[in-house]
Every structure is written in C-alpha cells, then in structure tokens.
Image 1: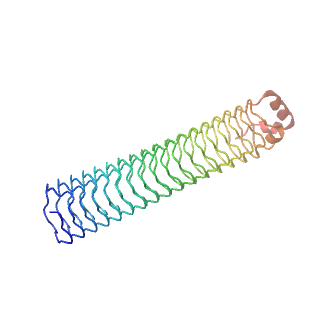
Image 2: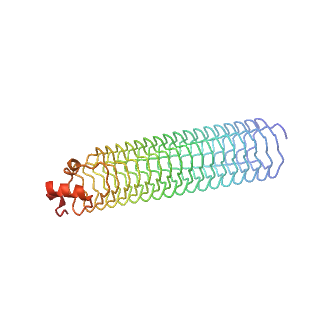
Image 3: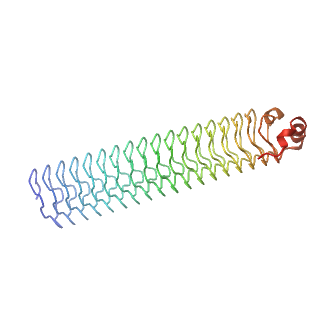
Length: 381
C-alpha cells in the first residue's frame, strides 16, 4: 500500500499495519484507526486526520505538514524528527508522545494535551499553544522563540536551555518548572506563576514580569538587566549574584529575598518592599530606593554610592560597612539601625534623616551628630 493519494478513507481500520513510507497525500483519514501501526517515513502532507487514532504508532520522520490533526489521539506515539509545520493539532492528545527534534513551526496546539511529552530539541517557533497542557513535559533545548503560550499550563515542565525569546507567557503556569539557562529575553511573563521555579543562570534581559509570582523562585546568577518587575512578588526568592542592572522593581515585594552579591546598579526600587531582605555585599550604586521599606534588611558591606534613599525605612536594618558616598538620605528612617563602620557617611548627610533613634553609629560620628542635631536621637514612633 505505497500510494494512497487523495483517497477517501474516512473511518478506515489500519490497526497494527505496516505502512512504512506510504504516501497518503491529501487523503481523507478522518476518524481512521492506526493504533500500533508502523508509519515511519510516511507522507500525510495536507491530510485530514481529524479525530484519527494514532496511539502508540511509529511515526518517526513522518511528514504531517499542513495536516489536520484536530482532536487526534497520539498518546505514546513516536514522532521523533517528524515534520508538523503548520499542522493543526488543536485539542489533540499527545500525552507521553516522543516529539524529540520534531519540527512544529507555526503549528496550532491550542488546548492540546502534552502532559509528560518529550519535546527535547523540538522546534516550536511561532507555535500557537494557548490553553495547552504541558505538565511535566520535557522541553529541554526546545525552540519556542516568539511562541504564543498565553495561559498555558507548564507546571513542572523541563525547559532547561530552551529558547523562549520574545515568547508570550502571560498568565502562564510555570510552578516548579525548570528554566535553568533558558533564553527568555524580551519574553512577556505578565502575571505568570513561577513559584518555586528554577531560573538559575536564565536570560531574562528586558523581560516583562510585572505582577508575576516568583515566590521562592531560584534566580541565582540570572540576568535580569532592564527587566520590568513592577508589582511582582519575589518573596523569599533566591537572587544571589543575579544581574539586576537598571531593572524596574517599583512597588515589588522582595520580602525576605536573598540578594547577596547581586548587581543592582541603577535599579528602580521606588516603594519596593524589602523587609528582611538579604543584600549583603550587593552593588546598589545609583539605585533609586525612594520610599522603599527595608525594615530589618541585611545590607552589610553593600554599595549604596549615589543611591537615592529619600524617605526609605531602614528601621532595624544592618548597614555595617555600607558605602554611603554621595547617597541621598533625606527623610530616611534609621531607627535602631546598625551603621557601625559605614563608609563615606557624613554629618551633613545624616542631618537630613528623619530619625536615628537607638541607631548604632561610630563614636566620632555619634558625638558630632548628638551635639549638632540632638532631635534626631529622640524617641520616634
């Protein structure tokens, strides 16, 4: 059965049939049954395979270009290296299928089920996958550049080293997903859920993460330069050594986040919540922390040179050995803060703060301030 071009085979039964290399070009195979068949190298270009049953079939290297596989059953099928460019797989079931190195460019996977599917090194460039389920799918090194993944379920998916540059990931479920070393440059992750996800060494330059959930997310050594992070939730996130140059954290929640040795030069933290944040040895040169809440934050050895700290709250914060050269401290609160060993901290700077009640200062600085500005040490609520 080598040539079956343009034939009407609706509902045909091909169970466990050997059809390697068969030519089905433009055939009507709606609701056809291929369970357990060997179709390696077959040609289904432009075919109608709507609701066809291809469960557990051998489809290695098959040509499905522009084929209609709407609601097709492809569970546990082997599609290694298959060509599915521009195919319609809307609402198809691909649970547990092997799609390694498959070409899925411009494919329609809307509402499809890809749970535990193997998509290692698959090409999903410009694919439409809104509403698709990728729970625990393996997408290592997959190409999803520019793909529309809005609202997709990728919980627990493996996206290590995947290319998601410019992808639409709005409101996507990425809880506990592995995105280590993935490329998410300029990706849109607004309101995405990345709780407990692994984003170590991930490229998130200029990505949009506004209002995203990143609680307990691992972002160690990630690159978030110029990323848009306004109103996102980074509570207890790990950001040690991350590059956050010129990132926008306005009104972001970073409570108890670990930012030790992070690069934060020129970042915007206006009205950010940094309660109990760990910022030891962080580079905050030129950052804008106006109105930020840093109660009980740990900033030992941090660089706050030329930072705007106007109206910031450092109550109970550890600021030992911090570099305050030319920092703006106007209206900042240092109640019970530890400023011992602070560098380049001048009397003139501290004369503009709101309070130094119960603050710890080097003796010489304390004496000078107490003499000139005693009101700064009065009880402050």
